[in-house]
Length: 168
Image 1 (cartoon, rainbow, N blue to C red):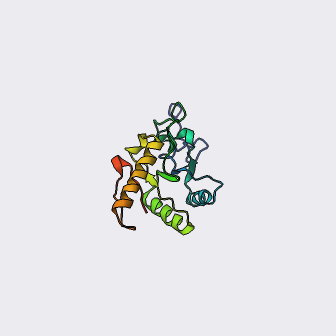
Image 2: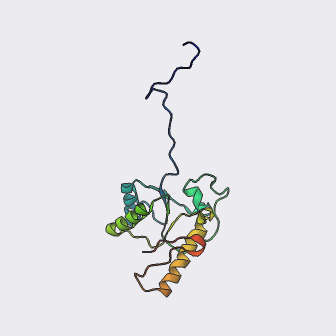
Image 3: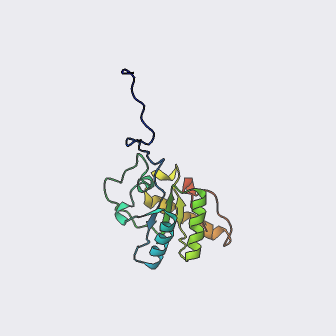
């Protein structure tokens, strides 16, 4: 039949490319130098889990959290950050991880002796926040929890306005 188009054979060389369903899970690290023992240990835990580690430098603290996670519609800030350095020395922002992966990261961090106190999950609310603002919100939440709760008591489910600090 000359007028009918031919069907493509299954598994042909022209197979359709499949794009990943979303951003790659990543962790944004502040104050965890790769050459330091703790920074290297945190990165090793993330690498074992298949999670990309991205280091946030001072000049990028004005970028939205979503830009670090490479979420659609988020771009780095047009000018370098010029504000005060965060009051927290170390911070981890977990992006795109499942609940099971978050729990695995927490457990592996404890096992490796590289627990970072200030950490958060990226959310629909905080993804538009500059990273410096998110770090400070989580730091403030930790200060409040430290003064109002006994050690080891579970923290609130959500931080100030969606910061979602993950306390251990």
